[in-house]
Image 1 (cartoon, rainbow, N blue to C red):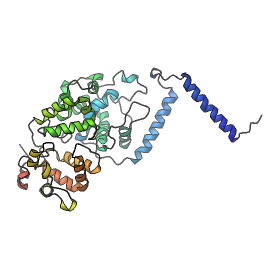
Image 2: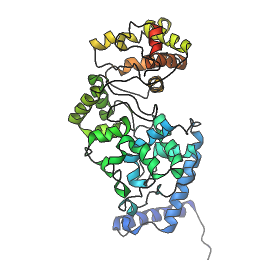
Image 3: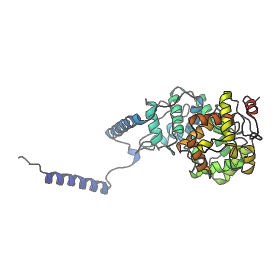
Image 4: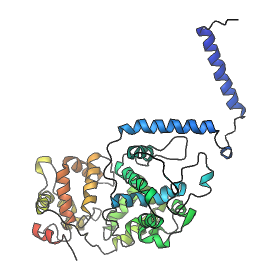
Length: 387
């Protein structure tokens, strides 16, 4: 018997299928228990779709920066230890057994890392994976932070346990737990030892580690530190690395941390720069760029200005790469911050990359410190190689 297919019959058949699906879902007969895992075909299909999606969308990701930078890897490891290792493990620190029972189970990076390109890893870290426990980056616009995570992930397969612990915990490594429990305390609110949680990256003296991986916060103005920490906690200063620990800490702890690091002796970072670059930076810092309506930097960041308003940050002796990076974030409109964020964003947009590099170098060389708003270019150069 030949059944003639018409639009009406096709519509009725489709409606019947949809109604059957709704009735099956309503009945509760489908088992959603994670203990049952996925059917093999379901797991294959989900991974097939995910890989195809990542491969295609990664084509739109820009070329990566140099990913072999020790500072970039350290920055990624500092977050990985508390934000990723509890689920994915790490060299010498296998997955927690509870995590292994999740559906789908996250890949164990303490054992191996699937072959993904740099752009594909960037896509996964930035946006996460739907229908799994893998979240997207808290601030996806902070591409610099996502690339730091990619740098760490690419280095993990060849990294030994001790090198991982050094990168992830810094001077706190001897005090940290080992094994599958490592990193789990970083998920508590607040962490059991808040200063140790900060010192993993910034050290207890606030001078940071691994070159320019982390900014120098020792001797920074207490009012500015507290303002910055509150901005991270509230989400107005955008950072997928800093926002989680600042939010977990609570305001009383943020006040204590600001006081601690402000009380540490400030020491300039040993750096060298081309004299012509410093001269160009000094001109911007002292005179501004009237043609671009950029005010003199020292009007806010010089010694006299900082005495008037301690909620502005000290810049002298900071890593030049950090200062230049912050200006780039202002220029791109993805940094955010406290009550003066709109001012700095406007300035960042009006500085060219070369101008930002020059003024960053001048402050890094010691310009703008106590009396730095009066110091000559020659005096600033003398601070390039402190003992």
